[in-house]
Amino acid sequence: MHFDLIQSLSLAGDAAVPNDDRAGAGEMRAWVIDGATDLGPPGLVGPRGGAAWLSSEAHLAFATTPDAPVEAMSRAVGMHLAAAFEAARTREPEGRWELPLASFLAARIAGSKLEAAWLGDCVALLGSGETTVRLGPVRETRDAEAELAASLASHGLGAPKKSEPILASLKERRGRPGIRVLSVDPVTMAEIDTAATPCAPGDDLLLMTDGFAALVDSYGAYDEAGLMAAVRASGLAALAAELRAIETGDDFARFPRFKRSDDATALWLRIAG
Image (cartoon, rainbow, N blue to C red; front, side, top):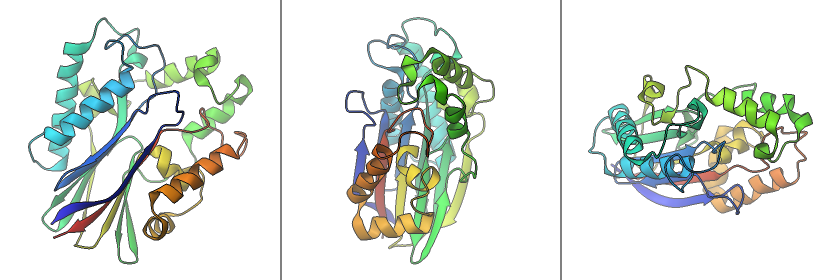
C-alpha cells in the first residue's frame, strides 16, 4: 500500500508573520509539524526565527531519513535537529524558553497497519468507511491553553508579544521541566507517543496541526466523524474558510486564545495499493 495525496492546505495565522507549520508525504510516510511561536526576536539560529528554522529542518529530516518504524524514524529526526542546532546557533539561549520546539505527528504504512508517532497537539484522523479513528493526543474536555488565556485576558489577548505579563507567563510555561515536544534538546523526546491501527486501500487519512484541528478540539464545530465527513464532502478549503469565520466572529470571550488565528495546516491522503 502507499499514500496518494488528495489535498493539502496551510494558512498562516497572520499574513504578516511567517507560517511555522510544515507538512509532507511520501510513498509510505507522512507528517505535520507545528513550530511553537517564537517568544523573542530572531537571532539564536541567525536571522530566521527559531520556529520556522526548526520546522524546516524537521520537514527535511522526515523527508530524507531512511525508512524505519515510525518511532525510530522520529528519533532520527530528533538527532538531526540536535546536530543542526549545534551547527547553526550563534550564541547561548537566553533561557530554555528560547529553544526552538514544535509539535508533530508522523504516520507510516507498515504492512496492513498504519503507525503513528507524535509529541504535542497535532492530530490525525483515519477514515475507513463509516468509522473514524483518532490518532494523536486525546481530546481534553478542558483546554489548558484556553484556561491560561482566560486567566490572562485582562492583559489583552490577540497580541501576546505586546503584553509583558502574558509574555512572561508563556516563557515560564515553555521553560518548565518535563515538557514533551519535538525539540533541539533530546531530553524532551525521551518518550514519544505511538499507536498503530489497521488500514486498507480506500481509507482516508487527515493530518492536522492544532490550528486546523481547532474545528474539533477548541471550537466544537465538528466531532471527529463529522470532520472526516465534511472533508470528503467539501474539501479542505471550505473547512478553512469556516475555521477563519469562527475566529473572525469571536472577540476572545467565547474561545479564549492568545492569537486570533493560529497557523492551520491539513494534509488529506488516501491509502491505495
